Length: 143
Image (cartoon, rainbow, N blue to C red; front, side, top):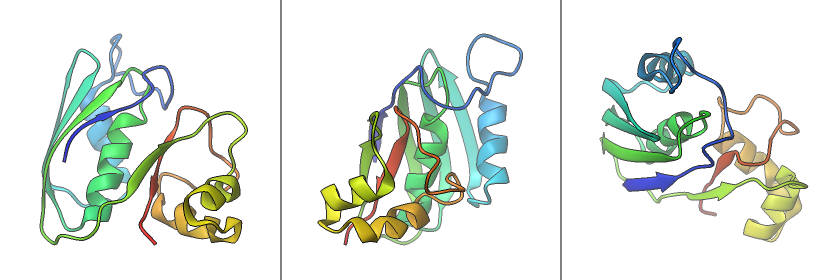
């Protein structure tokens, strides 16, 4: 997929005792979310997370990229994942102050009541549709 930009100062803190995000902590986060990446490898160079592996779907690929990018200290993700089955790509959206999933849904789908589509597309990273934060990047799947 290529490079994706993220807000470096936003996201979960995954430091392994150093000053930069810990690649092993990012791998653990991806595995704990049950995203099932074969041959998963993550490297961190400066503010870029480089992720390798094989995923089963485009949805899983996008979720792995978001897991890597929504980490404090990561400003870019270099997606080098392979995918087993092709499907349409989602749009990535960066949350701004005042956003809700309903507002984002209205903007992208023309219907605020389609917010569960966005919520489901971002599970397991999201556990509550009301808990999003500025700087967080979300998947907006095609209609």
